[in-house]
Image 1 (tube, helix red, strand yellow):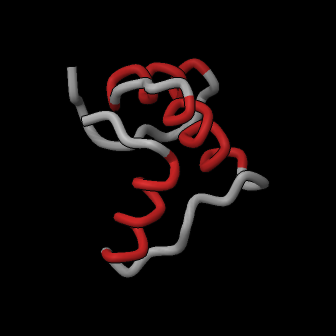
Image 2: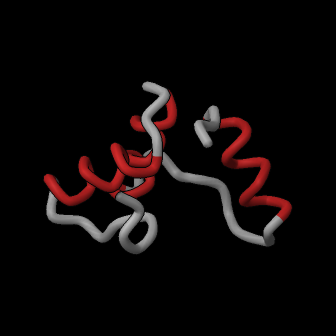
Length: 60
């Protein structure tokens, strides 16, 4: 599933979580991926290349 940043923040809100925050390094990588229409696996690859924790476990 590919979401827009607006849709992702809406889902986070309904799940009782805060919105993605651009000044948080991990959140900014997620926002970058969403804005560029990356899937979960692509975002996880980007996070891994930056030595950051993934969104989920193994999705490949």
